[in-house]
Length: 383
Image 1: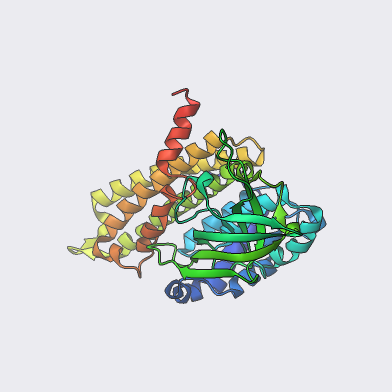
Image 2 (image 1 turned 45 degrees about the vertical axis):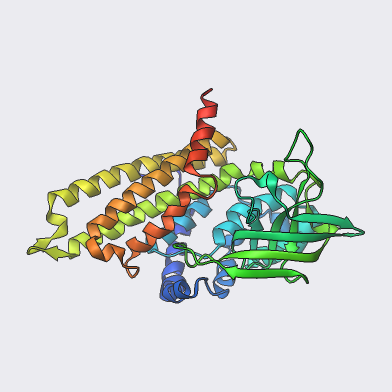
């Protein structure tokens, strides 16, 4: 079925992204894969293309277009080519909403030029070695000292942490209340060149190799009070407000990866010959790919409906949880079946299906596990 959520403007953008990826990403992707991160120049090239400014308000140098559709297209085109755009999704889909909602006009004027150009990439640091999903249990602290805060602590699993120029760090500015453990958390836009700010290990993941992930530590890092995001002690409530978009982005990624898996697999089975004929000619191959395509078609319908709801400011946390749960589980099943059709070659990293298999697994974990999504949905059902 023809997708109806995209206009001619979106189609033009899709063609632009496809050409950019073929020219600027595909030729270098293996090198970046081996290095465990993209070259920093990718971000400035994307900045030159204008993609980082699409949703930035016009008064701060952006296009001021309020829609998730351009981000979705970037994700779909990356998956189609079997590549990633580094940590661009974190920059755009996770960090920008916090800045648009919480930053003051003065902060936006300071930060947006580098954000839009890609010269200053952003990341967000929530997870700690001893506090994953339990964010209220974080131990990183920020103590007020004159016109600054003094930041101490550590974070882990920080996507984009190696190359980021500024990181939104969650830290305790007050102890939790007896009846409210979530009280006392604040958000800071920390300059990564600050003394005492250290990037630790670049973590070796099984997938998403070109999306750098790091450990961070803070030792008496002085953060100007002018870099506090929003109100002091209200950070936990802010973190929850962006969850629907974060989960929508993960759902789009999972759908796009599943669609790409079918594309790669169809090409492979049409070319691969066994017993004197192509793998595509076997009935089992046809049945398997037909079943996979049906699941991806259903995921596409869920995604398009969710994107439209998000653009209309109607995507609820439950809606986003449902979309994430469905699309990530579909992707897991589809990519596993597509890898099986590759036989032994499907286990080789030189084939895109192997990388998709590794890349997609984490979508059922980050942004809230599948089990957490089920709890959210069940609660909405009164269970």
